[in-house]
Length: 159
Image (cartoon, rainbow, N blue to C red; front, side, top):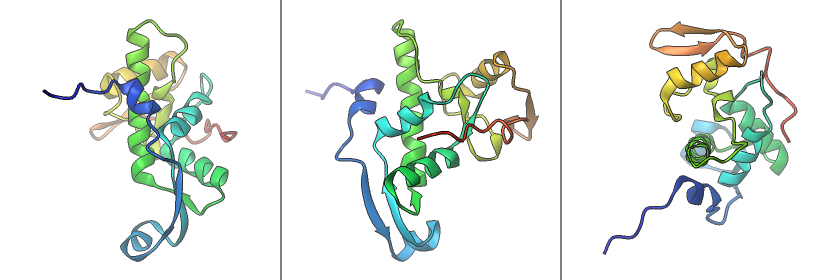
């Protein structure tokens, strides 16, 4: 008998023993940099995403900087931070479809360069619509949708 699939909210709540800090060595340090790093817990990433107020945006790198500062390390793992933001986004969409309010404003978390994340619920078009409703200007750049004013509107008070 197959094991029942976890909901997005269950995945978000499953910390799997995280956060955890480690020393970047070998190929890892060549790819991401030397020093210590943190693998955050999914709920930590979600908590940071929840702090971004309406009309403001952050990038994944801003989340990583806040996580590194919080844990007193050189950097936060880019891979897990991205994956956990994706899980937080899907958990928020799942909660929203169940009628929960408020939800994590996942559409305010952008990819680097101000790109709207096409892997978030509803795709880039849905994220663009939510951001435009909050007053952001969106432009196509190649195949991507980009928030024009993302740099000056960065919410730097993440803790």
